[in-house]
Length: 183
View 1 (tube, helix red, strand yellow):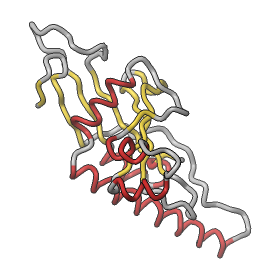
View 2 (cartoon, rainbow, N blue to C red; view 1 turned 90 degrees about the vertical axis):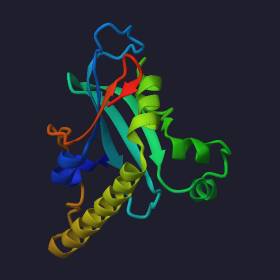
View 3 (cartoon, rainbow, N blue to C red; view 1 turned 135 degrees about the vertical axis):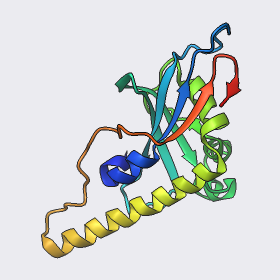
View 4 (spheres, rainbow, N blue to C red; view 1 turned 180 degrees about the horizontal axis):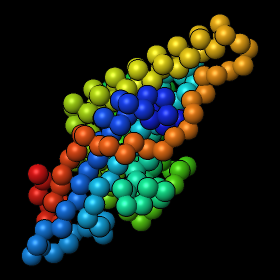
């Protein structure tokens, strides 16, 4: 898995999904997460032979960009798609279409809450379609790079340069999470 922003940085910068938590005066905090901006940074599989139709997210806070707060797997296809690919775990297809904390990657004390925010406020139908489009664009760009590299030299230049997450977020979901309301 490699970051979407390392392959298509302009699109990633415009279309990164963020959630904004705000402190509501007079309301008792219901969250251990502090007020601020939390980015769901997309990663996709770079293996062109794999067609897994899923995204891996690392959730980071704008005020702590070097700390991963949650690692989430999500698939946008129907459960039946994943059932055929994951017959060894009968729970996995349902979990992946709902979003699930990745058991092999970094989690924090905030991971369950960030997963819940993802499920309630981030993973809506327009965003599901956007992830499908990102996945397709990502794969097309990797295929283009492989073809270009094969024509230019035997050195594999398809591996994208690593870069930091996008700094400009235009797709925002504001949530007054302290009292449970959504803006």
